[in-house]
Amino acid sequence: MVAVLQPWSTSEPGKLTPPPQLNNPMTAVILSRAKGTYCRPQPLIWIVRDGFQFEYAVNQPISAIESRLAQVDQLERFLFSQTNDSRKHTRKTLDDAYDGIGLTRLHGRGALNELLVSGRVVEVALQKKEKQGGKKSFFCPVDLAASFGEVEGKTEVAGDYLADPSTSPPPYRELNGGEVAAPL
Image (spheres, rainbow, N blue to C red):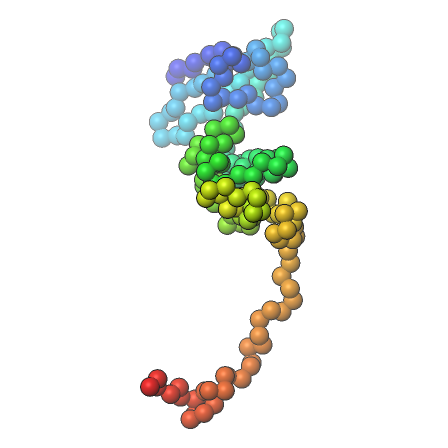
């Protein structure tokens, strides 16, 4: 079996980030092990040396669902901070901003759709003086939407909004034994 020990540098870290439990990740080396037959890939082992003492941490991979939820939360925090700074984003301006927050356009749009479907972000109409060209609305977190006069921050379902299931049928069915007359 072959194992590779490679130094990790902060100047060119790539996609690898050291685990948070390491004290001094500046001197970290990464031990990567070969994948065995019929088994999952082996996680990376981060090793840090401090004098004659060594400490290590195993890199735990995150699932696709956890990664997706982290992207959704990251986009919501971004929209919250931008709206607090009076920057109002549309779908077009968010497409340009995804690189700055570390999301691809595909992942950013998926996260935005998830926020809209879950109701954590709403589309708020702009005031008349702020409308420019085709820009008619912007995305706003629900917690801040009340300050723009859109919706309440916390909404509750009002009591029993459905009719009682034992209500009588409409009056036109009571005529002629319940039949509906053919249109003329």
